[in-house]
Length: 446
View 1 (cartoon, rainbow, N blue to C red):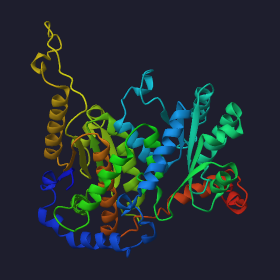
View 2 (view 1 turned 180 degrees about the vertical axis):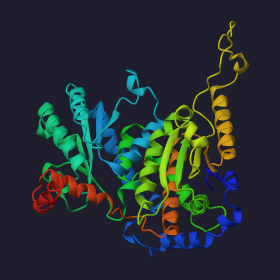
View 3 (view 1 turned 90 degrees about the horizontal axis):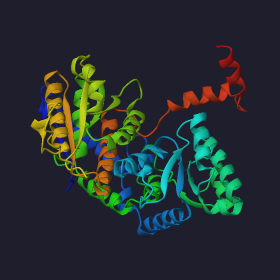
View 4 (view 1 turned 30 degrees about the vertical axis):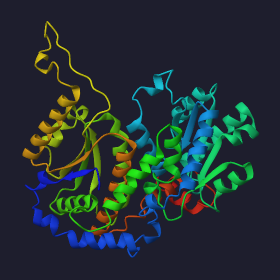
């Protein structure tokens, strides 16, 4: 049974229970396509049974590799972009002490940094400068080895690591996660003797967090990938049948009912700053999966209560084309009570003795009531705590919901044809060999 609760009561002023239930047959059909591989993009359904099919041998290998990197390195740079970056970043940020990077006595010792997720010259220069006197290693994640952003970062950091410690020693501190047989990175890894893990052909990048792509950086950061996978298995079992007890199905039908009612933007809202990158991962998952054929809900996010002081006005009184999905954490990791102050100049003594989380929960409740009253439907997703097991459930819940939702929308949730357009233009502008015709065409437009 799932530990995640999905509450849709606060959408019923916009769409009725009957309108949501009317999508159940389409959702059941979508679920069948996911399980039987009969829908569009069926070649990329390896994630569906991945939690149950992940072997003890693979988990032990990832853990052993993570331990080896942690023993050799104070820092490990995970190089990747999109799904090769966001999933690991989301889990690590959700679980880590917010100030662990500043703690000299942090018992996790080895910290995971990220590169290849941008082409920022200042970022890369500052990263290289930081690593110049550090013991560091590299996890490079790329199916082809030629994706521009991570390939640039890897070229720079590989050269730096080899310069600092020598080519032979550097090869022991580089792990490649790539294609089983093909591609530039696979060739290099074979030639240099890097430890490797495989990106399966049937798992797309944005669905890859529960593969070595996400699991190795998470393990290096010191967190339990066994618990993460166990949570995912729990949710896999909870989302098999097309019943009212299937949380992913309820989420998918509700958001599609809202979309058909004119709600074109979904805002994922959290009240815990540790979930910022979970929202970033979610935005890629749904945006890249559903935004096709001039259809799809636009995924956005806010971090509350911070963004109530910036975006709150628009959400409360702006155009009524939005709905919110509130991600709520029942129990924080720590307890902090608000003290009494004799002078009470800030007028907060009425809160004295209350926990900070109680204030936060009332901010969430008060905001949800205000937004619903203002015409913004709210779905509420509750998880017990920020722990590996529950994050594993949450990840699989969103993945399964995405597959169902995409098929209800009648798009292929597992391709991304639109992202190739910018690449062609960039290659043409950079005069990449083989793009001579495109270079001439695009330069004629400038």
